[in-house]
Image 1 (tube, rainbow, N blue to C red):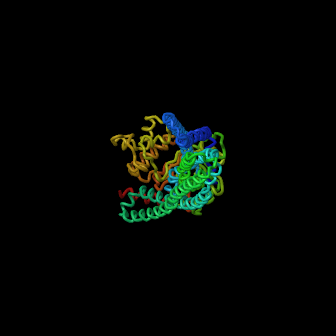
Image 2: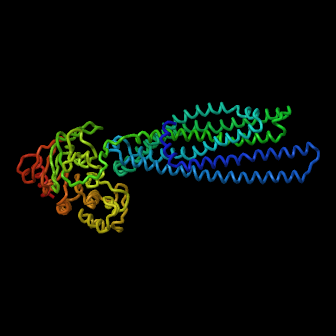
Image 3: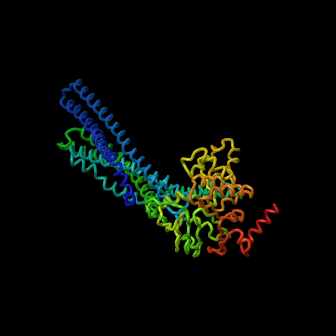
Amino acid sequence: MKELQYLNKYFVKYKYHFLSGIVITIVSQIFSSFAPRLVSDSFAVVQKHFEAGNVDKIWVESRLWRNIMLILVTTLISGFLLFITRQTLIVMSRHIEFDLKNEVFRQYERLSQSFYKRNRTGDLMNRISEDVGKTRMYVGPAVMYSIQTLIRFIVVIAFMAGKSVELTIYTLLPLPLLSYAIFKLSTQINKRSTTFQQYLSKVSSFTQEVFSGVRVIKAYSLEKQQQDRMVELSLESKAKSMSLAKVQSLFGPLMIALIGASNLVVIYFGGMMYINNDPDIPNIGVIAEFILYVNMLTWPVASLGWVSSMVQEAEASQKRINEFLKIEPDIKNHNPEYSEISGSIEFKNVTFTYDDTGITALKKMSFKVDKGETLAILGKTGSGKSTVLSLVSRLYDVSSGEVLVDGTPIEKLNLNDLRDNVGTVPQDAFLFSDSIKNNIRFGKEDATEEEVIASAKLAAVHDNIAAFNLQYETILGERGITLSGGQKQRVSIARAAIRDPKVLLLDDCLSAVDTETEETILGNLLDFCKDKTTIIVSHRVSSAKNADRILILDGGTIIQQGTHNQLLNEEGYYRELYLKQLSEKELT
């Protein structure tokens, strides 16, 4: 139960739901316990008048009808109160589920890039859906039935002891055996439930990857292999599920058997006490009353197995949730105060190594970009170009050295203010399954229709969008699959531009567009970026030629730098690349 203690804060938050549910449950159980006493009274009335030999049938009948009506009324009241109990405790569990899902989602947003490199998407989805659902079953039905069981036991045993302490003791003899059985079975359920949840995450991760990469699977005709792998994973998951179900299935029969044993105990010992004229058993109605009390405990006792199973599954799930809720993000906001961002950027002897791979992407790199300047970064694949942009937007912190923004170490700036003033167009353009308009508005939620269109025109994608039947209301498929690669990149540029950021980072975002469209976009950006600090990462010289300064990287270090004209006059990577791309352009 240690893992589930994390949820205690929610019980405190919804204490009025919780406490009112307990009070209503107590009243409900008291009303439900009147029925056995009324049945006992009915037996006593009939037996007494027949034994006396002077039967007043009208009086007996009226007494029986009175008891029947009282049983009906108390049962209806108890049922109504049970309904109110569900409206308090089960509704509380839905509130807790809502809060916990939001807490998990907020943690997902806080965690750093490295966390997502270590964890698979399917597993993370399983934790916020399946695991939180299991936890809700604990704070809702499990808690409700546990409270009902505890209160019913207290109320029923109190009523039983009020009649006969001796017969009550005999009736409760099987309970120690019940407690031991629950303990042993719960241990097995906890162990097998944890294993099952892990396999469920494997299935979720695999299916998510298959759905995301279905085009590649079809292109390579790997449907059969993926289906076989899915069957294999499903069979493994099924085996773990069946193993768990077998243990869970033992609870019901075991509980019913123990209740049956209690009934036999009541009949035998109660009968013997009645025969021996025990004053606690003045009539046969007391035995009937005890049998009804025992059967009132049937569902609560039988539900112990179900409740125990839910608790064990919830503990296994909450353990998985707690594992990452307790993770502190690598990137923290050290400054809660507002930070004004102008846009000048400086790297001072920056070295950066990726923790997950151990690769040193940048080595003692130093450069400066003043506010309003445009810097282009070129180099071979793996030279560290994209890493520079990640450090500017503080997706990672440097291993050594300093990144300064407006002369202030980047770690000392308010993280939210920094990122609010940075517009990033990533190399891999990611679009959401939403309308094109909302994808562009993602950069500025309150953007007007005119601003959306202006940004699309800036990115030279407006004409493409206007050609669609629904134009800006066109709904994109997952990851923007409806659009071509070049269209996705241009929508991403529009999304970044609509924010009107102080710093604009373009990570090889024109690689999928033709040279003519590239020229148009670069011309539009030239005016747009006049008062903005812009860093362009590219493999094309055409993207860099209008930059104020160009850096050539190789192996995480700067091997050349200068203006377009300066670098054309120097032997090296830039000149070779320019001549190569110039000849390719002439050939086309």
